[in-house]
Structure formats: structure tokens, C-alpha cells
Length: 105
Image (cartoon, rainbow, N blue to C red; front, side, top):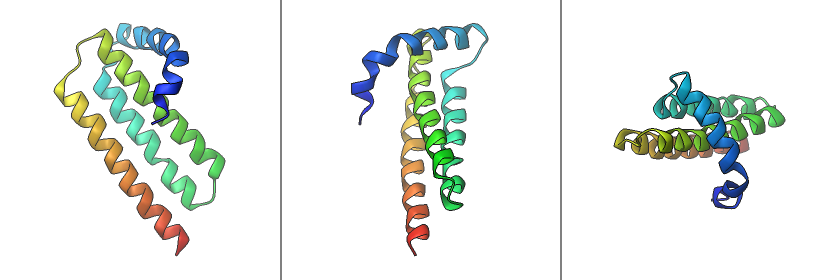
């Protein structure tokens, strides 16, 4: 949502980090999976009241989401990568709403 506003400031740094990642053999799909795990760590942090830590995990998740796209643009984007990204984002959003509902009750 807000990514389109930040991308013009983040495109060059993301491309530099993506270039380094490609050089050491990190793939876009690996980055997607790692970003998902980082994002999921926000949920227990939220449930235990560590809001600053949860925010850090969410920001890292968003960075990894941008990085996987930059890596895919440097290499060859795959259908699997697009599907992984979409499904993990939707799963994370649904699970976040469940955790928030649990916190409210």
C-alpha cells in the first residue's frame, strides 16, 4: 500500500543489497521465506506486549519483501515466487487479525 511511496527512495539501496545477495547465492524465494518467518515473529511479540520489537519485525518483513522483488528483477522472476509472496502476505494478514482479536478478548 505505502510501498509505492517509499520505493523511489529504497530502489537503489535495495538493488545494491540484492546484488550482494545474488553474488552469495541467495534466491528471491529464500528471501520471501525468511521475510515471512521474520514477520511471523511479530505475532508473539505483540501478544506479549513487546510492541517496539513487533514493529521492528514488521519493518524487517517489509524490507525483505522489497528485497525479494529486487533479487527477482536481477535474476529471473518465477511464478512460484509471485505465488509465495502473495500467499504468505495473505496468510500473515489473516493470522494478524486472529492475534489482534485474541488480544482484544
